[in-house]
Amino acid sequence: MITISVDLGNAPSVLAALGNPSNAQLLANTMAEAYVDDMLDWIASGRSFTGRSGQLAQSIGWHPAGGGSAKVYASSDYAGFVEHGTGIPAGHDSWKYGPRDRKALRFPVGGGGGFAFARSVVHEGSQPHPFFFADLDNRQQHMQAVGLSVLSRIIANAQ
Image (cartoon, rainbow, N blue to C red; front, side, top):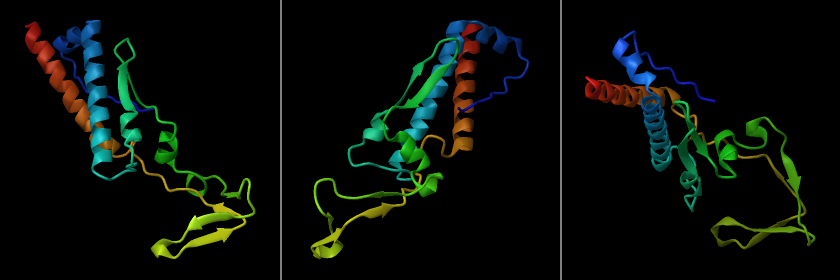
């Protein structure tokens, strides 16, 4: 869970603006959208896992949760595995697997060298490629700036 705090000061106009539920929801929606944009930029820049199909990036989104809050999500089945890794890098055991209906596994060898065969293979897991919680300090600062911009517009329009 991500907790974001925005220092609004003691300005009565800010409190009045947030007293309106639609303004509070607008603020939450705008901040959630900024967080999603930052995540997608992080993935597009190549600093995280970029799959061939773009399914991970397509699964990222947000929706209003009501009560002045919004939910940011990554709905892809493998999003958690990308974020945290698998096997030994994620603090779990490696696993051994073998062929299902054959005597051996067959896999291509790089450089056009044909195929290699094995009765079983030990997979140690994959390294994490954080995208959801990566660069959290910068994302929080960006969300605060976006939120304060929205509040400024709300207050300016109310006066």
